[in-house]
Amino acid sequence: MPSGESYIQSIMDIVKSRNVGEPEFLQAVAEVLESLLPVMDQSPKYRENKVLERIVEPERVIMFRVPWIDDKGQIQVNRGFRIEMNSAIGPYKGGLRFHPSVNLGILKFLAFEQVFKNSLTTLPMGGGKGGSDFDPKGKSDNEVMRFCQSFMTELSKHIGPNTDVPAGDIGVGSREIGYLFGQYKRLRNEFTGVLTGKNIRWGGSLIRPEATGYGVVYFAQNMLATKNDSMDGKLCTVSGSGNVAQYTVEKINQLGGKCVTLSDSGGTIYDPAGIDAEKLAYVMELKNVRRGRIKDYADKFKGAEYLEGKRPWGVACDCAFPSATQNEISEADAKTLVKNGCKLVSEGANMPTEAAGVEVFLNAKILYGPGKAANAGGVAVSGLEMAQNAMHTNWSREEVDARLKYIMESIHTQARQAAERYGMAGNYVAGANIAGFVKVADSMIDQGAV
Image 1: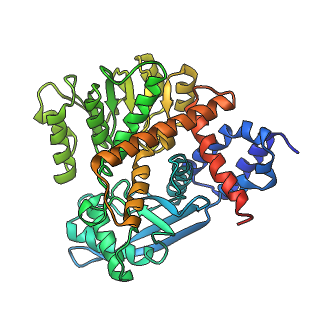
Image 2: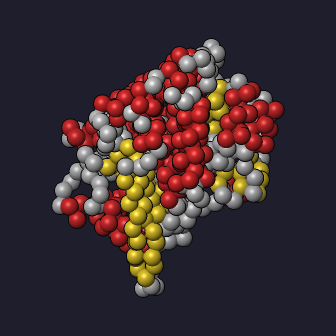
Image 3: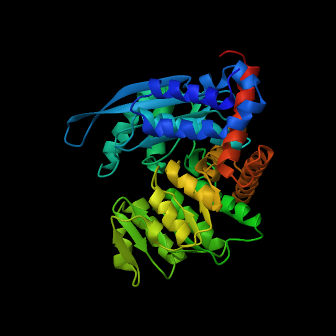
């Protein structure tokens, strides 16, 4: 039998040959496979059952056209996707992303990451992801509604509460979830928990909007506790200004930290006085209601500076929370963060750090929480929303938050213990990949060659 290293390289060669032009997917697969080297050496059953060969292939890829009519009466055509990656431990679960950058490779990377993230939550959920290259920015509510109705007309054939349960992601907020749910209900004539992130009035869960951001900070809190430290008094930088970033700032404030940055695709605002509750309320109104640009913050609040075209990583901090998008921290950014005294990175976005940047963090031995572990709070509360829908009940805010805290603590424990078990203590990247993989892989073996 070949060594674990040569076996993993052979799998990677296959993945590269089959997925040409999909760099994000190749990056995600390479990161996971490298972490699994000691597992392959110690557990030949995974090779014997061809688990890696299967886990890198989606169980199903659905791609379809989405025609819709704009406010001028013109027909527009977008492309829709759903990647049903792995259902070994439960129905496919993962968000929908509406953004011009969406393509097959990006969604396969997100679906692959989702498999391990969902495994870590301790809830019975498989991994999937979907979306469209449709851009909601600049569209009227009626245009967004017509697009969502057309998109769901096709997607409804492939999803269901026990098959595949989508949620929101970039570009898919409460407005879009509402339109998607309404069309599904109309087509299927049933009121069921087929989507998560729903409004609390019609099947949603309390804490779901806050869950990813809160969870990222809870994970950071757990990492700091291993050093007998806490969030209190920590200077923090956060990227992005959407849902995840907003509630990351809110929880940092609640735990005694101070956040000094937010960003969007145009640039970064730096507020040395800190983004307190009043300023955060302005950001929420700016982004969620007016759908404006973060630059307006610097015009509104004295002392705040707008760094056009810049990301927050040049600002000195104790803790960094990348919460915008994939690969937003380069190797140079990572080096700058470490040089400026950053001691912790907890990822709110999916794979926001380039591979070379991850190496910088690991070599510096800072506390580094990878996205699949640190930002799993969102899908965890989506799982709790599914449970509430199945029981036709609603839990209190306090109960959901307590369950979220417990799940994030459990994810931290799983990742930490798996890293220690395989001789990589403190490496949450390897620990999260291994812990997530073993549960899915063992389930795949149990279910045979499917």
